Length: 316
Length: 316
Image 1 (cartoon, rainbow over the protein chains, first blue to last red):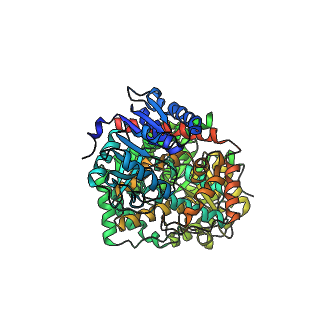
Image 2: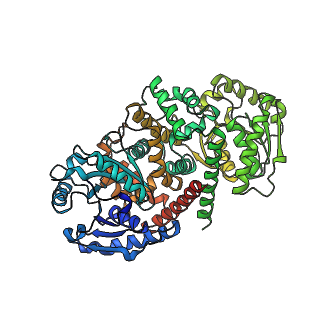
Image 3: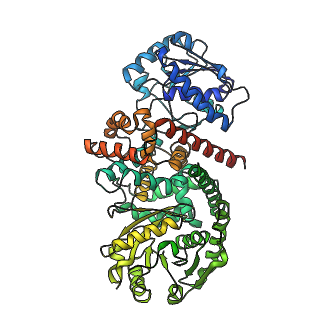
């Protein structure tokens, strides 16, 4: 049995004090939790405090939980002390498998087996990380996006020995603590968001390598083109709206042939009847039957607000 | 010699009345121009007026030019009449090569040779479009992003017979008329923004086809993860900031090896010393020497504002 109801967690331990570990600490503090950070080395303290102060300035603007305070923050370089009262542990140490394996072995021994340990790893598998842990069933990958206190995404996947209960508990915990968890259907390298981001990044590198565009042109193309839409809606909903009244079905039938064109160096999948239907059904479910007019009004309203943010930036 | 100073253009003709042609009309009207739309068929009028009214509601919020008014709008289904007083022509007819070739042949004969004709085409080459035009030197591709009245990007490229003067004039014209033109270094299929967008789209389709993620998971991953950043900054500047004080150089040295990993189905280019340097130099120029602290403050301030936009959307 795991720890109490995820909604009743009060004490969180963040292991690691870099940009990710510190960012998690800032997020949980803003949500009103008691947070203890484990610093591998006491010399990390100054950088961590600067990060917390920078984050706090942003978090105050977005809105803090009633009982949120930087006074709820503690730190130590003693791992046993750091985890003593933990009801949830977020681990963000460097991406070195041996380091994580040793840490999970120790944590497996010293932390109550009913406490979930979530890893921020972006590239390692939990099956590998939990290999030497005596209590692997409560360990899970929970990969945030940087900065974790401003971007809500957490991509989750268990390892071979992670329990279904652990995944369900942790998903619920993130929801009540202000994050947007996504439980992956399969373990795929790079999860969802990093894969999509990496696809753009690789195509961009190809363009620079071939003298087809400059670094600045690439960035301007994104910021003045598809970027503002992506802040509001994902690529599927955008094309669903792009299809007008006909939605995703129209869009696929109209632009399906373009998948054969060399519009990127990434070869597209075959647009089978099954894939076509999966895209259409997915859009219908996701938009809960909202019609084109209301979806496109929502998009435009958001784009107007983003345009105004940019006007103000330029005006500064 | 082309038409007068781009800054003195007052009369614009938009050929085509679909979402793109109508969107261009809305943009130019909001900037205070006299706009004449050519409708292939008078029955397109109702949809066009609905589009203009929808667009106007957004444009009023962003801010109209002093002399902007929907009263400055005219339409006709007579091509000669539509182009009679044109000082600039934006063509947005369907993406059918024969159709565009015939149109440019006619326009080449009836429109003064000192008037630029720009095509919104997303997939055809100007070399092909201008093939039968007697005055091809003033024709150029100028591909907008939808909706053209909210997203400023225009990707430009000439055909074989386009003059350098035409490209320079048109780039300047778009700048004074409130757009963000990018003159491509080479003609590549899909230009810059569509290629980057298509890279994401193809990777997303692969994931759905393989049961690795649902449509909704893909969209949530973007909107809750990298999306808000892309509204503010392109992928290069984001990684430049991601590298901390070390900037792009640190980022490439740290994450370069990940280019070998299957983090997307797109194979990355070799990270040569030349490519590494081009990325680093490009970021330094683009950010005009702003340091990490000020770049990351700009990013955070923008993300706070986008977070607030989303809070309000959910609160509706």
